[in-house]
Image (cartoon, rainbow, N blue to C red; front, side, top):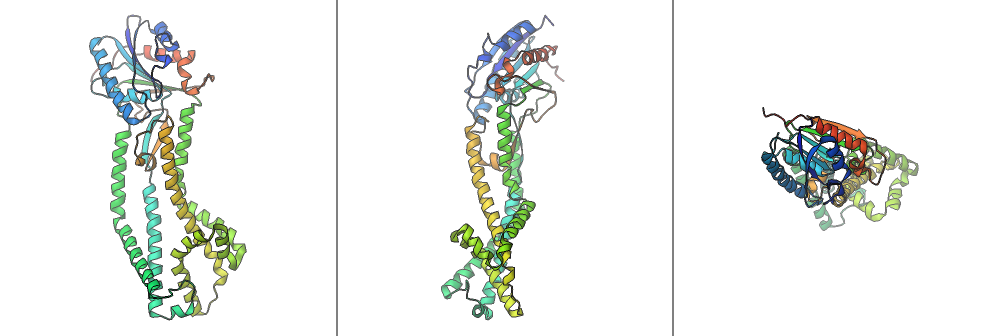
Length: 412
């Protein structure tokens, strides 16, 4: 063991160029010297910017630097230690052809790894839009035909076309609704297949490459603030699907119906008073053909359906779903900005990456072969995220991991 010679590259994280722990006199370097003996340190500096492009460029530069060290001293044990997003850099560098399978060990300290997966929000939004388009198209078509060929217009003045111009707009709206509904119906499979291909392609670009035979230690402190914040944002972003699930829609319908039922025949006015006339009109126009046709049919059959006015719940439910869907997109755009600003490393990613994909945080890389995980409960000394490289127990764990590797991985 004492005859081994080590060359250890130190890689800082985001916004941490010249980090103290990478300097020769740091607690980490002293521990490695004491535990390994003959150690040569090579700090690697990159711009530390919070974006995927900077990390990708840094990984290529790191692979070149480490490759030169490997060529210059092939008998030494070469290892890389990185903190935070530096871990994402070294795993990309370790898969580079220049150094692949030539490193003795890798250590990722408090690294938030990105694990992308498909977020099936497109199918949910498409289904909602398709259902609403068919509903309005069929209801408005029946409305136009009934108005044109029956005495429908004489039985109910509410919402009826007052002149030929008004009727012409209803005809145009009906044609547009039918075209939209048919287009959504015909192109659904093709559109979802296209979205799926784009998602899989982007997942392939984001996912870290397989790491071959290099041994990796992923070590972090329990309660890491960056990881906790990342998980909170991931759950918040996932609300985009929560509002579109059928069970959520049913629950909203039941709750609103229970709220409106005591109002009886005044339910429709309660909606208008609560949400204002503008919102009421926005919801009423798409639902109006169906409501008028229902009243017309009931009158022909001699039924009084005024007691069913709480079914205006359906109007409010449709409005709620529409507003929540719109709110989902606005929230997603807002989250996209947040994810670019905070130090989670998504700056420069496209909108599809933070909305149409789910980027789950993980303490471990997607490829977990040859990965040793170590979560430690450490006392708080400033940020938990930065506590590992200043804690004696954690440092000894890192030293033991590197020392346990007898030599460079052998080629197959």
